[in-house]
Length: 484
Ligand code: CS2
Image 1 (tube, rainbow, N blue to C red):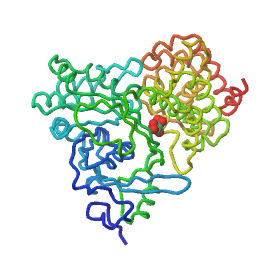
Image 2 (cartoon, protein in one colour):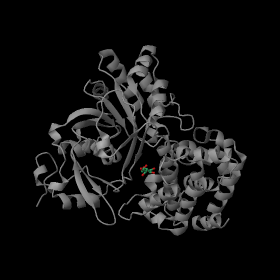
Image 3 (spheres, rainbow, N blue to C red):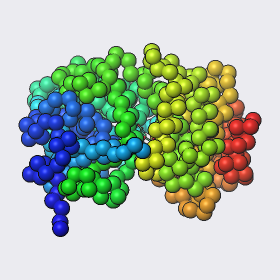
Image 4 (cartoon, rainbow, N blue to C red):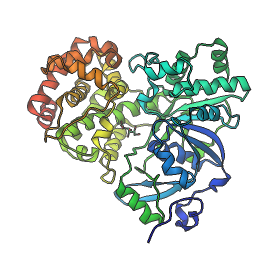
């Protein structure tokens, strides 16, 4: 018997507890979201769902897949929250429209410029901003950025935003708040910097200065890619088929700088923290959680583990991730009042250990050149400046170096490097396989390492760790580092 598809018409079939809180058809679209991937659907869209009657228009930045999933379902989809104690499912109705950016770039600009829109949120991943990770400046030489700057209907996020803002200014469509929700340090100001780099027109720059805000945010929820088994579970729990379902851990956190140019959803009603200063939360999260995540992803993938939960169940790998946090990261942090960093670190490892989440090491390992600076290298810079030896960070960075140079895991499975700078990595690695040669070539990638690439102390740590990772294998190298 065929199962009906999730849609406004099939809502009544759902278990009452799983239905949207507000009639989806009664929501008013006031948000444009750029990058409607799984993370957005499991995070900001859920906060909006719980905050009242705002709705959003989600924009896909690359493929039409999300539109194919959501349009036949009137924008509805399920969030399956997975925990060892049992799963929970609910349907979210806050996404009211979906636009396919690559198919209709003009519609994206028009929607951003619509006076009904007061907030633009973004989750386009680190690489989506087309910025230089070390300097934070817009890569004006990136072919897509260059094509936007030359005057086509823009297709990059910064180009889309600027064109939308320009039209708002010309048509007097009112102020706007741009809320970056990617894992970048000071992500709001970072995006404002890119917008400023892009804008050539003084009048527009002045209008943006007066009418647009770029609050910083810290976003946190682990959202692995949805599998067929997850979709089957959603069908079993809901009695309808859902092509747009997403899976996530139960934990969710959103800290938002309270700096808005116009009105916004009452996200605090949904549990978000609105605060004057996001930086303490964000540095803790990027360096502890994401730093440990990347470390486990590289070590785990090399050691032959498929999922993060398997990597953290490997005692020596978990211990290395723990020591990275306690010995190297914690001394660099000024946490928000009331946050116990030892508890935070332990909770992070517990969250990673959730066996119900099938989060692959490969997914976390991708785009290392875009992630390393804020997750690991900043910690190294701070520790070196304090006269300390950041040995665990160096171990983690050496694991990345091994991951991008090994070609295969220790159990013989191929490792394909998925990174926007993959070509640059490949040419750097063509210079030889000796640890010292690999380290010297990789740290001279200025856009990743910046000035840290000139630190002899850090280089020596990297060479030592990489030699042991390559020569002794991941587990033995971990044991050696833990004994030292
Ligand atoms: C992960 C993050 O894929 C990755 O690189 O480290 O997406 C992580 O799951 C989230 O930041 C958790 O909030």
